[in-house]
Image 1 (spheres, rainbow, N blue to C red):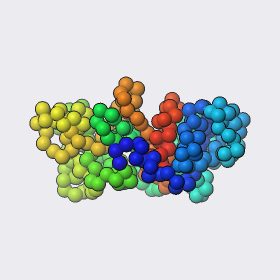
Image 2 (tube, rainbow, N blue to C red; image 1 turned 180 degrees about the horizontal axis):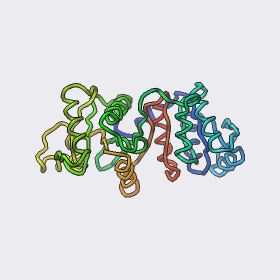
Image 3 (tube, rainbow, N blue to C red; image 1 turned 45 degrees about the horizontal axis):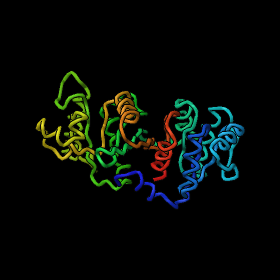
Image 4 (cartoon, rainbow, N blue to C red; image 1 turned 60 degrees about the vertical axis):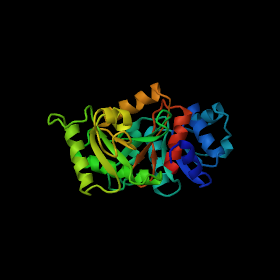
Length: 294
């Protein structure tokens, strides 16, 4: 798959269900309503009943089309939403207008949450018109400062999701500020180690190269100018970033300055966790929903 439109086609008619924690605000409801109208998913809305009804009315949605579960407190709403997914009453968990910390605490709750025993990581899909295909960025929202073993698990999560996109043997660029190994920069050392592990078959299902700069990871011309000869350089499907700070800044810089479409998702749990910024528009929220449904 190379576009979000192709993701939409894949999930149509599956009749899946979202549990949405505190779905307040017009943009969030517009996205949920679009998902319902397009036959992508129905939604269970969890939170303060009055605020939910107000948001539905603000977006021009019929409240009769939605199941509403009254749970006004942030922690209460988040935990109830997570438990609906953990029990199988819903297929995916979605963050609405509440703090990320409270939402994740509920999502990772030992009794009612979605822990699977593996590391949870965040992926962003970016549809860049200039490049003409989807690019994945990871991890831009979960693991603050991943060590080498964390990065292996982040890669494994990304590869598993890439397979759902139909990407066979995805090309992963371990990006840094330079494309040469610098003993003083851990990001370049980790990138080189991951590249070596990939060549030796210690990380399977993908091809990894690094360190690569962002320019020569995405641009064949930049890779050629710098004399980089690899199947990944200039053609990366996945950008593995050194840490959350760089991943978050990269994704938001592109989101607010470039002609791109976006979606975000937490992977590695028992079920998809659709986690986005409260500032994201309805289109980004809908793309994220579709990522989760896939």
